Length: 151
Image (cartoon, rainbow, N blue to C red; front, side, top):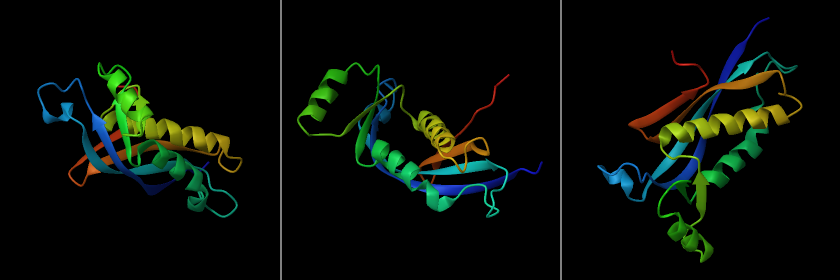
């Protein structure tokens, strides 16, 4: 069976983060990035000879942008969580609480979300999957997540 790979870059939007554990760097402060992600889709071809229908990814793009565009992403264990939740409640920020933050964890989150999306679609279910995601904070910094075991 032949396997093919195609890629798609999706703009995630402008997002603010705070990495409270980075106490010795300026990343401990709220700071923002214009995020974009590249997805690697691998699988067999459909009747159109496509691994994935790029036009059919609008719902995934919308889901990703809902998470990151004009939002503030904070780690679930941030000691200032109460303050961030209060700011969200009064409309000062659009808060997203994540297991952890950082560009590596953002790439992992996007990877998992994209594979869940593909499995929910009749034309891609069990035929293709995301094998890798790269997320850029900006042109000089990115992180890649692949689901492999490090030995």
